[in-house]
Structures are given as structure tokens and as C-alpha cells.
Amino acid sequence: MTAVAACTGLFTIPGVATADDHKVDSIHFLIPGGAGGGWDGTARGTGEALKKSGLVETVSFQNLSGGGGGKAIAHLIETAKQQQGTLMVNSTPIVVRSLMGVFPQSFRDLTPVAATIADYAALVVRNDSKYTHWDQIVEDFRSNPRKVKVAGGSSRGSLDHLVPAAAIKEEGLDPRALRYIAYDAGGKAMAGLLSGEADILSTGLGEALEMSKAGQVRILAITAPERVKDAPDVPTLKEMGNNTVFANWRGFFGAPGLSSEKAEQYAKVLSDMYNTEAWETVRSRNGWVNVYKPTTEFTQFLEQQEAQVGSLMRELGFLK
Image (tube, rainbow, N blue to C red; front, side, top):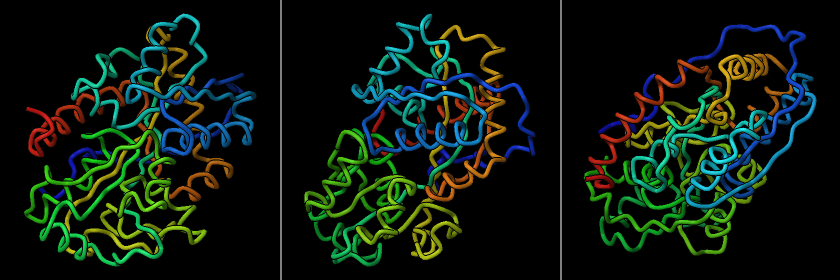
């Protein structure tokens, strides 16, 4: 397995769209995880760009963590009639956790509005870490898998777990032996790394980039096919001899019953956002890749990813 299949068919950038006078008055962003995680950063960064560019007059945010994201999904469904002005941020985990039975709902119970970005996975170490190359991790894992402790901001079997597991499997080693420490959100996982509870942090590039630029951590490798312009000094796993390539989409869902007209309106304003200076500031700061899959196309992509990720998870032993 040379790549995490979740990224197949992901990279499309929208055509130039001109912002028009059909502004959205307000958007309430529902965030299924805690502060400091990828969902939090995506929702707040998107809201920041929409407001600063004048595309949306008022934005608000609500963090509702719990149940691997299931608490926020259930809330959106149960209060759907009152949530017509709400967009919930999510990403590949809505597919992964549904497959695992972490929560009973799936993307089919919501209204897919648009996928908007992709974020490469990153393997992060402390500045004083002995690890300076992926091969050193492989060597330690081969001698004793218990030596290598990997932190992630979500549960076992999640993307933070799947990515290093896939990389270990690519080396011909047993991914099920990986010692993974689960935290509730990326901020807590980063704290676990800095405190020495873990040796490596598995996270998104966007979550690690600012701390890396500030000199607080070192990004050992990313899962891009080649180096990215927003982090030119960060090597890829591929150039270190490991062919694991992965990008995690992030996007937005409306409540069930959201009208197609309203969903299209939200999708349009998100498309217009790409062509603003405010968005480019947010995007480059986080090292995100622009993607755009609106409404029906987004739903079709989710169905395809569900089949691909399910196959990968069975191969890695996370699903029977």
C-alpha cells in the first residue's frame, strides 16, 4: 500500500468566481472538537476570511466536543429546525468514525454543503528530540514497538492513528503494534508531546505549522507527494523512502432538511471566499491546499471515500 486512499481524486481548485452582492447575513459554525484542533482552526479561519472579506456580515462559533464528534452531529440533527443558519465543520473522520461505529450517524444524515480544503498529515517531534529522520523511528520500532509513543488528537483508529499506522505498514512492520496515545483534540495532543508523554505527534500540517515557525516543535515529515510551498524546509515521507501519501479534506455540512437553495447559497459564498486576500492569508498561514467540491459533487466524493477508507481500515486491522 503506497498511499492512504482517502486522498484519491481530491485536488480540484474552483474556477474564478466573482464575489457578488448576494451576501450571507450570518453563519453559525458548529465545531465538533475542542480548541486548538484542526476542525477549530478550519472553522475559525473560514469565518475570519468570510467576515474580513465582507462576504458574511456576522459569524459565530460553538465548540461541542464529545463522542468523537458524534455529540455535535447528534445535536445538529436533533435541533435541525433551529439550525438552518448553522454550518458544521468536519473532515475524513466523519467517514472513519461512522465505519467504526463510534456514532450511529453518517454524512447521509446531514446536508453536505462543500469540501473546501485539504491538509497534509504531519509527524512532529520536540525540538530536543533524538529523532531527526523517519528511519530512526523505524529502527526503534523494529527493535521494540513499545519504545515509540505516538500522540494524536483523536481516538484509536482515527486519522491521527491511521496515518502513522499506514507508514509503519509501508515499512513491512505490524501497524497494529503501534503505541498510540489518544487525546481529545489536537491542542491536548500537542501538550502531550511537549510534556514528554509522547515521542511523536501525528497531526495536520496546519496544526503544527505555526508552532514550528515559532521554534517550539520540529516537523519531521509530512505526507505530501512533494514539498509544499508554505513549508519548503519540511521533508516528505516519500523523499525519506516511505511512499505514504495522504491529504485530509475538510468541509462543511448543514442540518438535515436544509433546502437545496440554502445549501447552494452557502456553497457559493465559500467558493467566492477563495478569491479574497483574507482567505489567502488564512490558507498560507496554515499550509492548506484549496479544494472545492460543492453539494452533489461532495456527496459523491464522500460515498467514494467511504468505500476506499473502509478497504484501508480492514487492511490495517481496524475493521473486520
